[in-house]
Image (cartoon, rainbow, N blue to C red; front, top):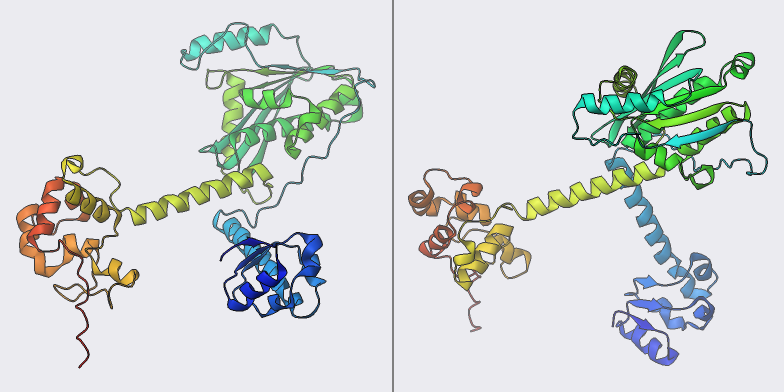
Length: 431
């Protein structure tokens, strides 16, 4: 009996003492009713109760606390191992977003506007010249600013080695500055884009008080529509500390009386400012990433990718030939089943499989004595070399065998006499 709810304590005691109970599901307020026999149960593997509840139990029942502690310890070990394998354990951690903006009734002299479209709609497939013209028209319709920011982010494969770059043009001073910053060893493209916005806005908000007071309008041009859409939800909706920090900087400028417009422009459309920001982001991505923190979303994504890769490797190892074998569907039932088993690398026609499931004393090939397996049977066994050469030539690979006609594989199995599991001979009768 693997699992039960507590109904009759005398009956439960009998189950415990007989060793037929391995799991208990007990509500916390009934733990004190557990029979003392529970402490003598050696097969109990799971008890649904908190550590504090278990610690308060008298006598031998208190020793069951190790069950929950072992489970928690295992979860921590697996989590630590996954973090190590995904390459995120040693990275600095970004805190959760705690910034909250001023209530709307306080208001600011300045404001923030998000524009995620162009006056003339474009598609990614349009020629660069068409997209560039549409972007320039959108920029021309914006008020003439004191400062223009071109920001861009870069992440290799959209997943790692993030970099942020920005070109800041001070029109009232006829001057330009560039900003580069790492976005993280594990980093999404969105996070790299937000990092670029944050670094550029921080450079503007960090100007001397007198100089900042003279800045009345800022426009930020970015090719990250998703970044603007995220920020456009408002400061109270941000769960990422990085996005909340961007909003804090925007509100700092608004408190100064600065109007900020964030405009989306198409990327790689021949816009000089965007191309410069893209180059700066690439330079930052190639630099040291040790100081860039990782956020919870990126950590989850990294672990998910690693688990998927582990699953892919395991599937590949267990299924050495994922591509279809030509003619498989045309085989009779026995041949079709046999070929499917051979393709997965686990077949009752090989001794290694029989040994694993306890139907053979060893994994030795009955034809040559070497360790048996699907690969050994189809490509390596010296006893079947002649039969193999007639069908696939000299030294065929497993991909050659399973990638050829399905009927040829079945013909080989029948030709070498391996149509039945090579079980151990029965033991001689007692004298």
